[in-house]
Image 1: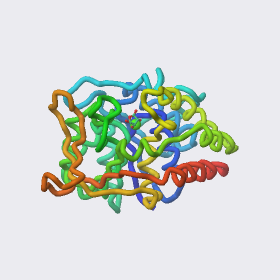
Image 2: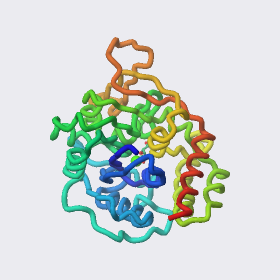
Image 3: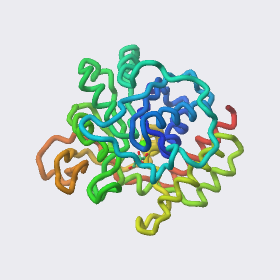
Image 4: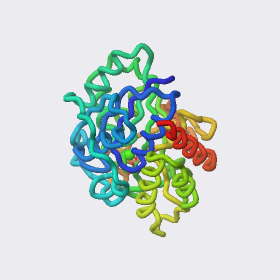
Length: 312
Ligand code: BDR
Ligand code: CA
C-alpha cells in the first residue's frame, strides 16, 4: 500500500478523486490538504471536511493551505463548481475540525514521519506543493513522485493556451516542474478522453450506497457546465480522478516522457505547459505526460470503486 497526500481544491472532480483514493487499500491516504482554486480557500477546506465526513474518515488529518497564489491574485472557477464549490449533492456539515497547522506543515510532518517515500497528489493549483518544496528541500527525497492534474500539451480550458490549475499559479507550477522530482502530468490531453456520459451516471446511480449517490449528484451538476456545445465534448471530463486511476491502473493509460516548461510571462500564453513531445529542445524530460486512456476501463474502475463502499 502506497502512502499518498492529496492536495486538492474540491471541486466536483477533486471530491470524486478523493472518494476513489479512499475506496481501496492500495493507497494509504496519510493527509488531505487544500488549495485555493475552484473556490476560495475557506470553501475548499470546508468541502474536503464534508467529503471526509461523508466517508466517515475523520481519522485523516486535514489542513488548509495558502490563501492565494505565490505572486498573483486568486482566480476561482465558481462558474464550473457553483457557489459552494461542490453544488449539487446534499452533503453533511463537517463532523471534525482541520488541524491548526498549515497545509505545508502537515505535508512536511507527514513526509518526515513516513518510513517510505510518499506520493504527492495535487489536483488544484500547485501553490502548496511549491511552498513545501521551497521551504523543505531536505524532504524532496521523501517524495516518491508527484502525480498531478494540470496542464495540456494541446489547447487550454481557461485560456486558449492554459489549463486552469496551472493558469491560477504558474510561478508555483514552474517551481514544481523544475524540482527534479518525478512528475506524472495528467493534463487535458488525457482528461478530455476520460469523459463521463449520462449512461455512466446511470450506472453510478444504480449503486446502492450513499457515496455512489453523492457521486451521481456531483456528476449531474458537473455535467451542466460541460454540456455547452462550444466545447464539443461527448460528456464531462473527469479530470482529477485520472490521477488516482493512473495510480491504481496505469495500464489504462498511454504516456510519454517529455520536457515540460511553464510559461509564466507570455502575453497570450500565461500558465501554458510547453510540452516538448518531439524532443525539439534537447532538454531532459522532467515529466511523464499522459496522453490517452481506455475510457471504458476508467468508467468500470469508477463503478467498481464506488461499489466497494457498499461495505462501509
Ligand atoms: C481542473 O480545474 C478544476 O476546475 C478541476 O477541479 C480540475 O482540477 C481542470 O482544469
Ligand atoms: Ca481540482
